Amino acid sequence: MSKKHPIISVTGSSGAGTSTVKATFEQIFRRENVSAVMIEGDAFHRYNRADMKAELQRRYDEGDHTFSHFSYEANELKELERVFRDYGATGTGRTRKYVHDEIDAAATGVAPGNFTAWSPFEDGTDLLFYEGLHGAVVNDEVNLAALADLKIGVVPVINLEWIQKIHRDRDSRGYSTEAVTDTILRRMHAYVHCICPQFTETDINFQRVPVVDTSNPFISRWIPTADESLVVIRFKNPRGIDFPYLTSMIHGSWMSRANSIVIPGNKLDLAMQLILTPLIERLVRDARRA
Image (cartoon, rainbow, N blue to C red; front, side, top):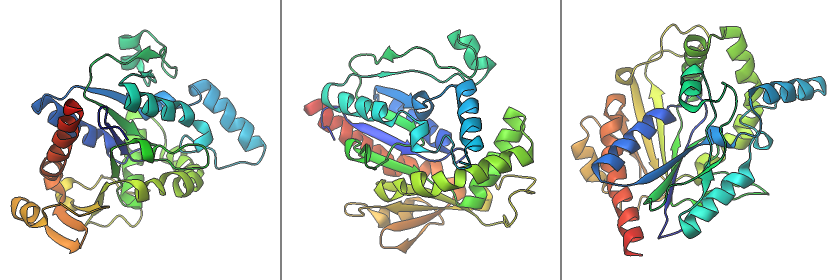
């Protein structure tokens, strides 16, 4: 970790809602006049779309039915660790963009399913912000958790996560429910071994819990709304967290454990603003003093 060049990582699996959390961070950065370099986990995939498809088929033919973008070996985690380390030491680094669709292609001039060229970060930023699948990985080869100053987990309960993914991939990407289900099954091994362990490393977890029936996520016609959900917010180290203040400011909230608060789902943005703004202010203040 680095006082002078802090790093914030937001980790959550595909369809978990990390993009919504990213938007809240962007609001805080804008309001607090914080200059952030933002990188995405997609940029550190090892394969472009065609190569990934070929690698999946190769492994499937060899009897491996568990390989996915969740897997460590499908990502350039050593490169991501190098970026974290370089930024923490010098405030410099590089990233690229994975081009998802025609909209991205029009903006970048690169065909969908490919990467743009690597490019350096702009100079003079206050912090690095990562959002993706692997922001808190600790394994035999890398230790990303040790290099990030503030680690956030975004973790809906599993049935809700599946519902969100099924609806997103069907509506935005044109996949059938059966195709998305196959992807979910293939990812389960890596979800258990690569994704879940990261949420032990995170400083704060936001877990959305629906309060409507999601017992069969594969036939659910709607994604549960914020009004149909609760959010459990867990602090790894609750020391210094003013729980009475939070429960007084967030109507309908309560403490469920000594390190956890439960809030109505439609209060998530408010809760994040209240919790994260002072943490970001402290990181940036210490960085500017350093």
